[in-house]
Length: 493
Image (tube, rainbow, N blue to C red; front, side, top):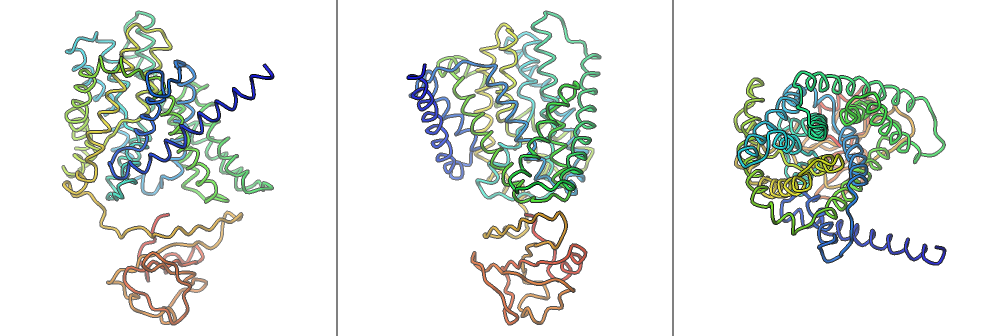
């Protein structure tokens, strides 16, 4: 053992490093192809698997589920940290309808088609439940890679819905799997009670843990800045774990906890967000690599026609139809509803959920896993590659100025103090063309730096502002309103 173990560990670390490095390197291709970067991670896993070039034998569905669940919790927490409650509040109602009734309706439509194909009703409903939720990471990786900027209402609807709809898919999948394993029918009344209980416990638990965690963050003084992200990571783990133990939705709780923490004042906020962003990306890579290792191309090929048919029905008919109905009461324009329906991409969640029936020993679960894999891949290719085109055709691209090319971050220990914000100088502003010495700044406010043509300039009083510039203004929080009277709305970092 002593002689073998160092070499065995070295082989494992070398293989992991090679796969991780290859996945990250291939991520550049997503910008050119307009595909979710996670899909490339999945491809690396398939190529490294048992029937791929790597020949790595891997068939541990339980380990994959545990790692996938952990990864999804971290991804949802990171998404919540970067979701502005002020912006999300305006789309909370339509996003909630999409995340609950929309998921149920999508699952029902897919189940009907699957039943026509030949699946039993319970197995068809299970397939519908597994593929019913969208993936925020998949959607926004495409938008980020292609440089697509959406109007706030459309972008926030996609973001909040993706953060909220995983719990419903998990609850449905778990209930239907239990029914198939036990041989009993699902009782709609019992299912409705379970859904209401898990969602309500998830919200209450997530809010409670978030407020307690933020209260502690603002009062404890840790000896090192790196301990603050460690503390927020513990909050995320507790939010998911404790809520699940209370028979609530851990996924909903961890997203709610992230939103509450991210919308308030945090010490070392820049460092906290940077660490969780890295954890979110690492979680995506690991999750998709493992899921790819589970895939056997020879088995996938056998169910490819069924998977492709269901994927096209889901992308072209079910999702757009359900979205249009759900958003109709909220007076979304047809272009906005069509875009939200088209860009609801699937990601890792369905593949992770497809491992649950396998672990439960449900008959036919392995072919179902392969069908789900095909649905995810085709669903990412068809809408995913057309996101920039659909954005232009449906006219939902944001008219806001492009974001600053320079990344300026200020990280301080104190939770309160002067704030640094970036402002775009448009031609119609009164300060456009004016020297800094001529601008009546409020007390305590000043321009700390200026970005012009992608480069940073140290300004002086004689520096004149030109259209297209970004000015970085440091000012007390109470003076932000006066600063925005001069420069307009600040860019969100």
